[in-house]
Image 1 (cartoon, rainbow, N blue to C red):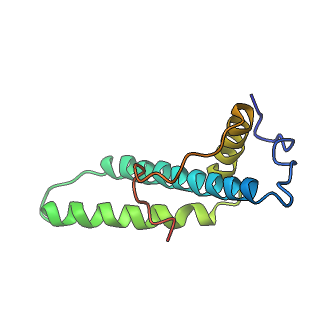
Image 2: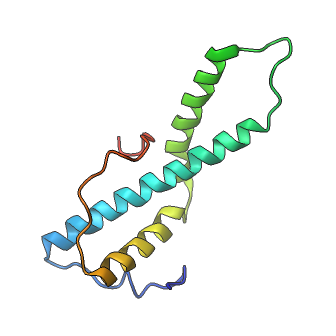
Length: 118
């Protein structure tokens, strides 16, 4: 298991290996997408604690708007973090891929769109 502060995994530079550089780029992208999904779910959970209804209930339109707003804010929030989750996720994924000795699978469309990869 790799500790969060452990830099030994990231110390190996892909150098001139284009396959390793492409693998690292894909791992960074996947880790940023996973961080975006996490932040989006966090905002959704936070929003569910706010009481709704009453005199100014927006109905389905308000729910749709707040969902889109949460998605947009979730895409921008990790950019403001100095040390976000994506770097830790990247190190964990890189160690796992390196231990397996396999390449990163091709791009998957199974992840939720978060607006991060725009």
